[in-house]
Image (tube, rainbow, N blue to C red):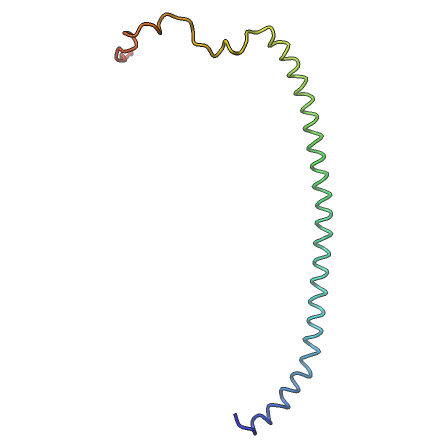
Length: 114
């Protein structure tokens, strides 16, 4: 680039900067106003969604407490019946038969039955 060409570019650049700077300034201000509105809308939405979530949680807690009362009533009724039935430990014991003491029959190969 020589000096003559630079002298031609200086007025062109000055015109572009003179008219481009206000446009860029207005664009920047509008952009940040838009972002500010978006942030406020998002904050309002989070506030209302937080209240809705809190309402849902309270509703679920009330349902669980209602079910818990029903469950306690049912458990109270079955616990009185459980006192009449045999203890649970007896259900897990092996049956008292003499077959377990006979080792010869347990070692026989399995027979096919039709």
